[in-house]
Amino acid sequence: MLRVGHGYDIHRLVPGRPLVLGGVRFDTPYGLEGHSDADCLTHAVCDALLGAAGLADIGHFFPNTDPVLKGIDSQVLLGRVISELRARGWEPVNIDATLLAEQPKVGPKAAAMKVALAATTGLSPDAIGIKATTNEGVGEIGRGEAIAAHAVVLIARK
Ligand code: MG
Image (tube, rainbow, N blue to C red; front, side, top):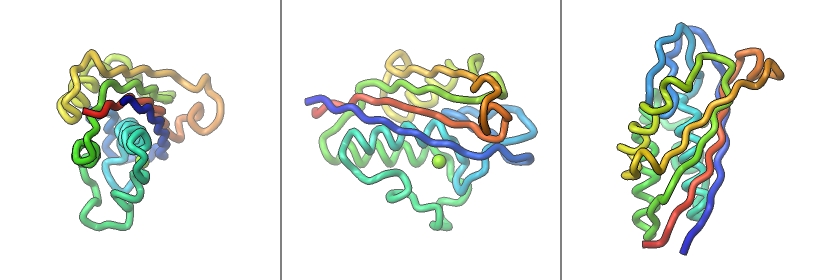
């Protein structure tokens, strides 16, 4: 049996925060604001996986009021999501994600993101798609105030 899931996330860009996308650190003077490391790409993947399995969303499993989760590496959260799925007999098949970011250029780090997400999910890097687009200067993403991500996943019953 196969299931599809979709996830979306957006975080505000602020000065003085580390920027982490898809588990990869960018060398920028600004980063995403959030309770965890605010990796919106990984959060979108988490929600897509949880949605495919018919589970509650990432905020239910990892509330932003939990002090233990403050600053946590989102790869740890993704690993826990994979464990939740495996406990219910589900395995990820592939992930396809799109980043919406005016800056920085994320394309050069897409391969590294695939490797990071592959290590966390147990997938092969070639089962993970990472695409990026600007927002053509439109809206809050276009003004460089935020970065957003969409993700679609397929999961299969073992
Ligand atoms: Mg988030």
